[in-house]
Amino acid sequence: MDLIQKPLLAALNNRRTDPPPIWLMRQAGRYLPEYRSMRAGAGSFLDLCLDPAKAAIVTLQPISRFGFDAAILFSDILVIPHALGQKVDFETGIGPTTVPVRNGSDLAKLSTERVHDLLCPVYETLERAAHGMPDDVALIGFAGAPWTVATYMVEGGTSRDHAATRAWALGAPEDFERLIDMLVEVTAEFLIRQVGAGAEALQIFDSWAGALPAHAFARYSLAPIREIAARVKRACPQVPVIAFPRGVPLQLPGFASAGEIDAVSIDHATDPRWVAERIQPSVAVQGNLDPALLLTGGAEMIRAAREIVETFSGGAHVFNLGHGVLPATPVEHVRDLVQAVRGE
Ligand code: 1CP
Image (cartoon, rainbow, N blue to C red; front, side):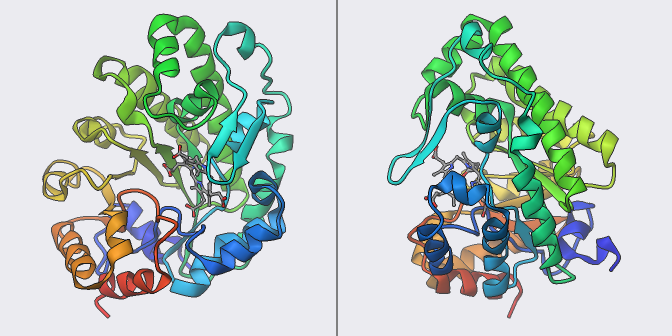
């Protein structure tokens, strides 16, 4: 099949499609009973991410159930610190934890040498998932943006204010930039290898971009993402790159005018009408239903979904949420959403 006949790839190539393609961030995950049973028998969360046979099945679970237009690789942004030699754990009810990296001597303990050996299972997951995909469904690879990955590496896990990361970035920028540069290097290669293994589009998640002070945004969020996208484009010019800088609506024009980025994913706090006017003329837009509406479901969710479709109907649009599916989401609401977006 001509790649562009896949609705997701058509939209990411800036074509208007009616209806828009739909997939959801965190579409493979805890709200799905079939995920929970796979997870229960898989050991730790990281074990599951690095078990290609199981991770490929999980990647395809939401496709079988809902018929989304894209499958996203089942993995996590924290496989990169793990592959750099940092200790990473996922504790149920707490989330990810790491042994923090806070200065130059902690940095010296990380190594890029074995990164792609350790990430081999991720590439194998993509190869396996690519074989099980329906013809019109696209396979998305992903990575965390350097800033967001750095926050988990520096804070020791999830953080409310990211104070240690900001203190390092702003107080000792030469050292911190070595960490960002290391992440640019390995993330670009990671994404290029994902394409080699079957990924047809890529998303870069900068979930904590909104924690940066405005004056440091270009240096630590936009520039590293652009550099990664540029390297990916040099190696695989046909593969669209989606950037998801969360919590920074006023910075979206910088992503839209960067030639390396094909689409921006927008969070639910961002006004879609403003995005349709200011951003969509330059690049495809992805988003932005509030994931909380998927908890409620019903008429309000359907009304809001149709309004988003209508607002973005003048250009290229990929329907998605403003952030990931919440674990308490009823699966029937997801089915209703897909039908509403497709006008069924
Ligand atoms: O116990 C479990 O089953 C773990 C829950 C879980 C899952 C299902 C985690 C831990 N990660 C994932 C999968 C995951 N993570 C995917 C898979 C593909 C899909 O979307 O279906 C993706 C793309 C991610 C990306 C990810 N991980 C991000 C960026 C997107 C976002 O949500 O902002 C981030 C920040 C992470 C870190 C992470 N991993 C897991 C959790 C609970 C978190 C977030 C913790 C926090 O809020 O700081």
